[in-house]
Image 1 (cartoon, rainbow, N blue to C red):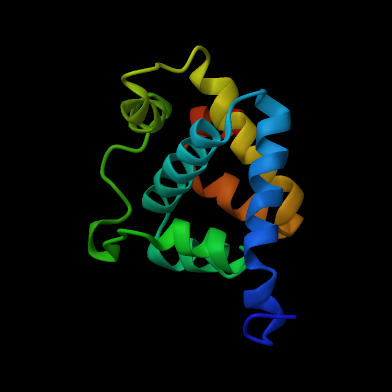
Image 2 (image 1 turned 180 degrees about the horizontal axis):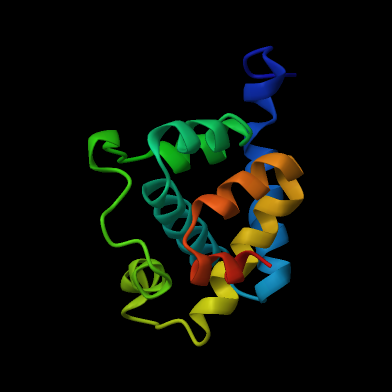
Length: 140
């Protein structure tokens, strides 16, 4: 029996678990580490985009993933001033101080590949093009 009777909400945990499972299969990591990577990468993407572009991307995310994307967001502080590849990777890596990422570029690229599989190609390309050129290379 459905908990709310609203399909989007009732299936949200399964959809979120699917995203974690796919990313886990891509990287071979445990769920806690995968969750942290997904959150930090989505937050960095969000903060590197204009408010309008961030909202456009969020509109295509499943409800729980969208919640993670928006968690803690202050739109008045985006896009961040420093938006190069090193800044992006450093932002994600900062959350992995106890167990550093072996290959931060590969980890971030895995999240970008997950987005490629789950948002429209047009939106994916718009987000990629909104990033500075060296950072766009991680989207390929």
